[in-house]
Length: 451
Image 1 (cartoon, rainbow, N blue to C red):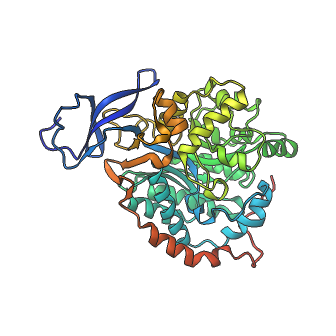
Image 2 (cartoon, rainbow, N blue to C red; image 1 turned 120 degrees about the horizontal axis):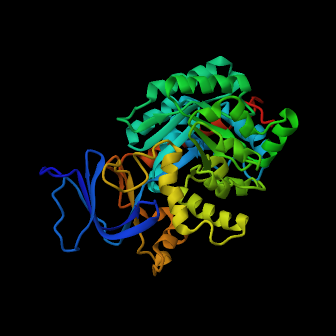
Image 3 (tube, rainbow, N blue to C red; image 1 turned 90 degrees about the vertical axis):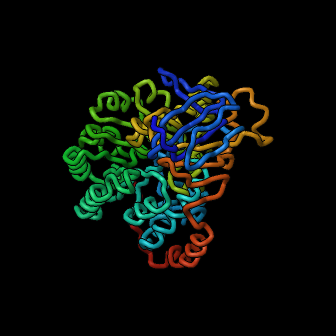
């Protein structure tokens, strides 16, 4: 501790904490001191205690402090496509609408979409997001400007030739450690059905050579797993194993098509494997299975919460993903004791931080961790009375109950007021560009969906 004033002091809150075995609990009347972007101390104090001197003070009585939420897999600029491809099966969604429209993308459209997405996520208590998209220099610029944290990868298909893979590597190396350390990067092949084995193997080699993780879609749904078995005799997860991707640190998006035969393959991975689950989209596409969280838990594989892009999910609300994950797991396992609210909060905090490779710096409110946290107001009628605080947070609270969002000790939203993004201006500019974006008269598309 130093005698100079802290950067920020938060007083009077109830804090979500983890014990030595990572069980979720709560501590009341907590004072959190932030200095240099890091949590310096978190202590329970008497309500009458005078707060330590600080450049800024937040009185958080009646609020709960949580580690900031992490959106472990999304395509932030796709908020521009929110609602344009509704009530369609996956193949038609891609081929008839999304991939034709995405052939119209410009860097300006990506930047505007990313700006709007970051505003939505900050307002929903998301302090970090893992993005997998195109023209990612523009997304990195938005992240640097608005103050959020991000794990970014430039997506590529094998149809782009070796240039796609090279651009993904160049982006990852150029932006690694950017935005004063708030940006981490990954190589981002799209999926085993759009990136061939040779490209996946080359990606694995590049990841090992440069110390980079990999972020990709794999075994997204059961149809993909079945098609891969029928055509190639292996599952998408087995493709990742034979190409060396599972020997890298890899974040797998979705995994609802992970089969029982894949579990020993994942258990034998020599890299750090994690999975991101985005349940709302699976319900919309009427996929018959969901991410097998219980089986992955038994293997020690972290499952982080995600939204996917707003074109399929219609929202970037990780709070909703947390509640849906808990409910769908209860339904699919036939066991109301799985997932509990505390387990869901563990996925939303430590497991999500681990999924994006930041498990040593984020995910729990302890001294030495980065000061990424949110304050949630539980005084509304829909969250009262509180008998079980974990259940209230997961099943009663909403993302709109987040009052304040802090990243690296910087307040990005205070009392629901966004401080770093001009939303009306972004919406106006995006609206002006919408006709050009949505034009499908050219008959082209950036890729074909044929698993």
